[in-house]
View 1 (cartoon, rainbow, N blue to C red):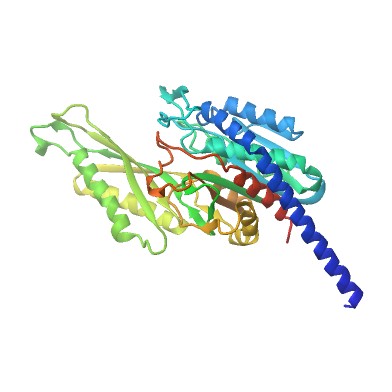
View 2 (cartoon, helix red, strand yellow):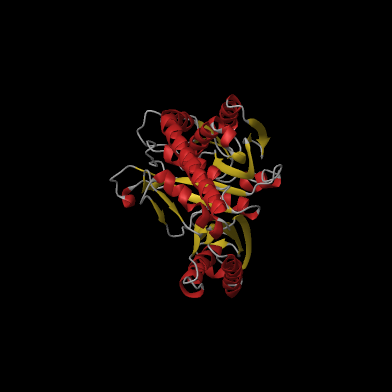
Length: 430
């Protein structure tokens, strides 16, 4: 290579570096200026929550905003989902960004001016509704991201697909919904997505900070039922019965030995929780049947299969030992949320630019679950946590997600906007 070629390449690289710095500065300036609107959107959504597969008003709110930005909009995907498509002014990949929209049947206790007083029907009952997991923040962040990127459309390398997803918390009853239905209805196609990014607000991570993990990050979520059939009798003569309640308690204890004595938790954590135990109608009648319901969390697909088999064997053999019968049903709800290691390594600088030096760190894997995992079956995926805990608060004292006291500080949601925008602009680099 001659000296003139070397100089030309050096100048070109210098120009690209300056251009990247300019885009980063524009993103930072626009996201910071937009923060009051993002907070306003988040608080409006918080005050008007909707349950899974019922997010009609939320979808209308989102779609109207995207249309106002000149973004191509599709509605009615996976029942109430909204997808926006923004074609940039330069050639490049298709990058998808996802936010979930649904709230939970929880009665809000936090004393905030935008507190939810909404009620709705859930499985035949009237229930309070609250954004007790922070999905209102996710929607507002993605709306803000859309506004920033729409203003920078001519400079965007490729296409951005904004995915506003319903029913992340799980559709009610036997309905389909959530990410599996979004994928089934083609959200990762037309155009085909090259990479997808998502975030989740955390009530126990300080505002302004980001946490991530390569590989397995969040657990699979499987739900199980164990139907036990015994023999009824009068409570005064239990020897005439095959007591399904006693068998059920023995099964519960047996399931815990799978975690404590059988699963190799050095490889990955395992959680088996029985959350419901239904049996009987009167204190002096031993019933014929009992029903256990619970959840299984694993962070390794091989371990997931192994644990399922151990649960079936443990329940049926314990029941047989008492001449009862146990029928085990396991419903796979959510896959392991897996972050593509190469994608994480490549895009980590984008998060560092968004949050600032020293504010992006590695986290431990968690046994919570996310249906974002289904998008990762179609394209490399990267999911990360964004801090929502007030500065100076003890994470151990922070109200948990899915509880009436759940609370986040929304004063730094612009960090999430900056992260999404930087990911879009930086992904083009090979």
